[in-house]
Length: 357
Image (cartoon, rainbow, N blue to C red; front, side, top):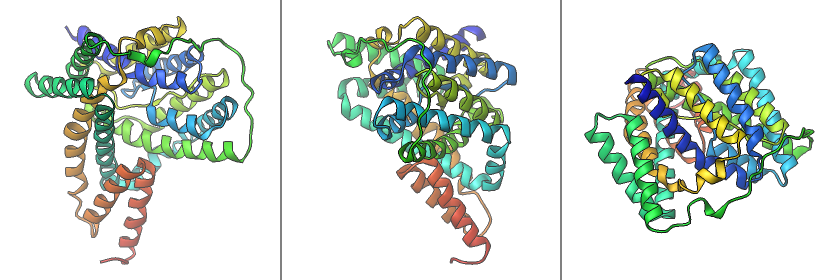
């Protein structure tokens, strides 16, 4: 029975990643080379016993896709950012950053991410009211009336909302049919725009790894090693982009809620790699509308992530902790996790030297 739940969790996260994978293809990132990133993640998670898998992440894909004027710039940004994150992870600096930030800031940042997820959910509902509302209603019903199980929540809400879109005759997948596969070494370029984009990706990835990795570890009841996550996600990005593939980053994964979170995560990445290797992503995407994950994102953000982490963030006893936590939450939700962390650290330092009220 446990292996069935592990497999369901893996399939659910694969379905969750398909719309983001289609987004990557729309920016010109190749499908087949991206499979190498998933293979690296699967091997690393199995070897290191990590509960934090990597997959398509809409935020990173969009940032790289919009900052780069052409494919060479986009791939170069992802490559340099991946190499930088690989170095940071190998040197153990992400763990140092987490310890330096402290529980108040880290949990406040995760609470802010919860708000971000809920905002994305509502944006998806506005894009497709029918599918989004069905996804939200189904996810809420499954979560609250079937044991608050995230695995069942994502799988059932995705299936029900996808069937709804099919019955309504909607154009699922946006009519995308071209497979951008193939293997060809892409030599990285360098200019100021690429440098700026790589630094922006590094900032986003640092915040994402700390926030998403910690949240996934919390769901699994384990301490996710952020340095390990940074190391293998950076390596995956560097290898994938070197052959034309897209970025694969830390995600908040429902596999963490499976009975065997490491196995479920490895299964998810292996399944996704197989889908990419054989060029099935655009075909599968025709059956899963992007807005089908709206319900799961809302439950994960507003119900699971925000309340728990906000409670910890506001439980600090040091002077100014409540203000530090509040500002970190708001800035994270408004900008991104890394900027939220910087805002929290700046306030924390001000209070520690006696400046402030």
